[in-house]
Length: 117
Length: 111
Image 1 (cartoon, rainbow over the protein chains, first blue to last red):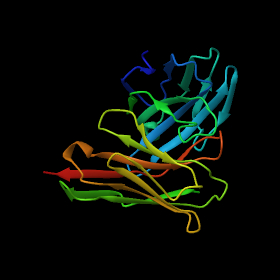
Image 2 (cartoon, chains in turn red, brown; image 1 turned 90 degrees about the vertical axis):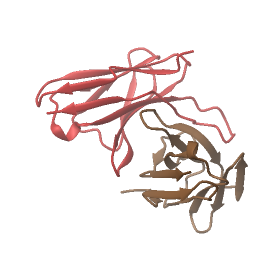
Image 3 (cartoon, rainbow over the protein chains, first blue to last red; image 1 turned 135 degrees about the vertical axis):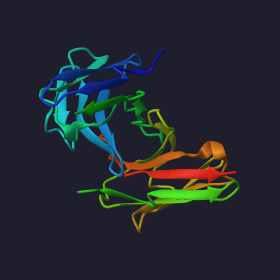
Image 4 (cartoon, rainbow over the protein chains, first blue to last red; image 1 turned 90 degrees about the horizontal axis):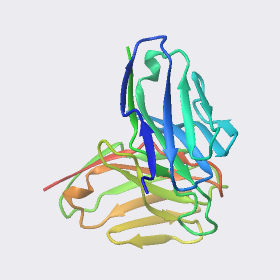
C-alpha cells in the first residue's frame, strides 16, 4: 500500500494564480484532512471531510476550498494565491477504530511545499 | 484560541539524556492524547498515545505521563539517541472528532 500520497511535492506560484493540491489514500479511510505547517505555529487544520461528498471548515479555512468527490481523494484548491499561503501543506487520513489508544490515528502524506511570490 | 499549549519550542540534549516535552490542554472533553514524531522533509507519524483513564504509558524508550487534574501531559524519551532528533507534536481530540495539535518541539540530540 502507498498510504497517503500528495501531488505535487513542490510548487511556486505568483500572487493571484490558482492551483489544486491532490491527496490520495489507499487505506479505505473515511476521514481526510488538510493541514498547513508554519514555523512556530504547528499543524493547523484547514478543511476536513468525514466521508465522500462531505467537507467542513477547520481552524484556518479562508482562501481555500476543498472537494471530496471520491472516498480516496481529497483536493485542496487555492483560487487566488497570496504570499500568506506560503507554507508546507499536509494531507492526512484516518478511520475511527473504536475504543483503543490508536483510534483516530492520523496517517500523513509527505507534504507539499508551496511558495507564493 | 490555542487549545493545546506545548513547551519548549526547542530542546537540545546530550546522547543518553532524558528530554521532556510538556503539553497542557483546556478542553476537559478531550479523551485521546497522541504524540506525533516528524523527521525533516517527512509527514508526522504517530509515536505513542494515551487515554485519560491511565496516568502513564510506555512504549520502548518513550513514556507519556498524564495528569488529568492538572490537564497536563508530557513525553519523556529515555536514553535519547541522535536518531531521535525530530520535531514532536502533542495533540488532543474528543472521540472521533478532529485532532488539535500543539505547536511542536524541535529536539536535537547531540552525540
